[in-house]
Amino acid sequence: MEKKRVLYVNQEIMPYLPETPMSKIGRYLPQKTQERNKEIRTFMPRYGVINERRNQLHEVIRLSGMNLIIDDIDHPLIIKVASIQQARMQVYFIDNEDYFKRKFMFKDKDDLFFNDNDERAIFFSKGVLETVKKLGWVPDVIHCHGWFSSLVPLFVRTAYKDSPIFQEARIIFSLYNDDFSERFRKGYEQKVIMSGLSKDDFGQFLNGDYVSLMKGAIDRSDALILGSPEINAEILAYAKTSGKPILDFIDNEDYFDTYNEFYDKIIEGN
Image 1 (cartoon, rainbow, N blue to C red):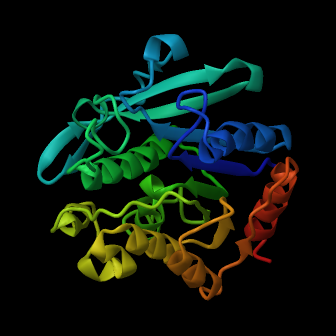
Image 2: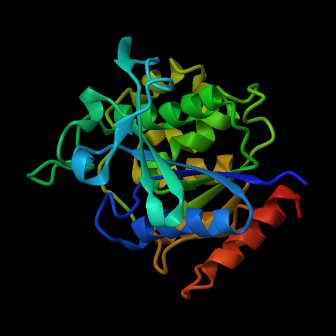
């Protein structure tokens, strides 16, 4: 029997970023899933705050070299990789000089939301999907973590819906307490439309604020996981009435087994 395959699209993973509930899940869930006889691939952005030398990141030449067009500009896609030796696990990093060189994640030194976070999220999501296509690796589950991965369900269900790599994949979206109050720039949807979508595809994504991104991801996913004990009340209510299978927040170290049982249930369509 072939191993099931889980693609992790992460906003944060420790030790590359400081420990948070999300980065801790990003670190240990893929490892434990792999130990439960599943294949994994794990991706995150190569934020400039990550120390490449200390973490031994290196470029994967055979995967780099593509250009992603955003707002009529070609942006080189650079793929880097690092290994977490004790977990026997590799992490792929999506990199680009324009979007990820700065020494911050989503806000500058004055705590101002980056004006181009819309383009950065588009680039990250497309970069993951294009790299998985290039690997020829067909996932059974795509598990997205954090708002920065919220466009992945949209792209998989629209621009990439005819790709044999993603056609059968089940999308699971984890909801966290990672709100932001800002809104993407006016017209951000035009940059997404250029990626093979029409305006009719957007649904809830159109407004470009946190709530609409989360609602859009919920609509385009097959199942949901509550990754934090406290979640934006409007998002939680929307999730609860979505009709999607939901795994409630688990506050113990056995969550790995419960998550993997949930994967199997969603793969089997139960």
